Amino acid sequence: MKKIAFLLVFCVNIAVLAQVDLQMLKSPILFKGDSVTAYRDPAVLFDNGTFHMWFTLVEIEPDGKIYSYTAQSQSKDLLNWSNPIKITPRDQKLNYCSPGNVFRFNEEWILCLQSYPRPNYYLKDHPRYGDKSARVFIMRSKDLQKWSDPEIMMVKGPDVPIEEMGRMIDPYLIEDKDESGKWWCFYKQNGVSMSYSYDLQNWTFFGHTESGENVCVLTENDEYILFHSPHNGIGIKRSKDLRTWQDDGELITLDQKMWNWAKGRLTAGAVLDCRRIPEISKYLMFFHGSGPETENKMFDNYASLGIAWSDDLKNWDWPGKEK
Image (cartoon, rainbow, N blue to C red; front, top):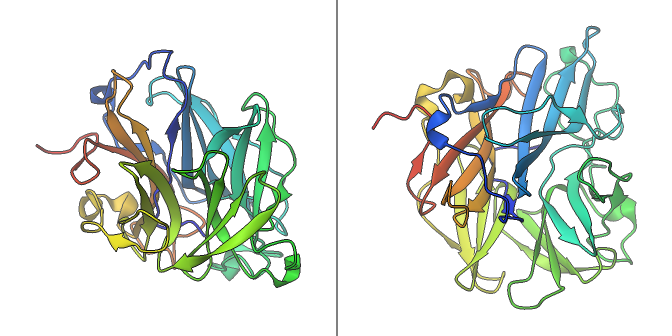
């Protein structure tokens, strides 16, 4: 499921000033998991002066049964967040989760996410990952609050039946840097696979490349910047044509060695380009960490959402960093 990956976040409407002072953040933890709760896989949007965040919410019920949801929260200042609201149903056969990103398309908002079926799953079975029927979906909204039912994306093309598409997770959608109206879906299958569409309904499979999980993609200086999650940490790849990719820099692990809450794994990052917002002027990165033990022991609990920032995607700062 969502692992160490960076999720891309868009700053859509910057006309309304952000009420943000990064120095006011005293802890890198935005949502803290506990023995019966995990917060994973953040996706973030800045619009009209508000940060909107979607994430996987995992809950262990009193009888030990485990459910995954997509939940959302809002903040004006990155410090105070509204109580999470679940936007997907309680159903272990679906477990909609791992939101990728949110963007405007044909006068409505689009959220991409996945199913993560784990029927009859209890804490005693931990850990059990999503089965081979996991697929990728979109949801639609007019107001970022009320969402339509998930619609499956036939990313392998119309001639490939749903049952033959193969297990796929962690979708992320972005418009082509050179061709307006052409949209790419990146998803975890054979590394990262890529398909394109002009209407988000009819898809053409393009190919795949080596990659970890939970990719998020930026376009900048005539190239694609892909953030992904190997076993631990955040990796970056770059490409001009989506076919040839070059690794860029070392894995990003921030202060993981000092963070008990992330020592098991640091993952699921979302990079939000806020350089044009005067109060921020940086890239923001949202991610999740689990710990102090590995995800073999802490997958459905003790996962927390964190934040860091950078001027150049190479050097990172976070609340409480020692200078």
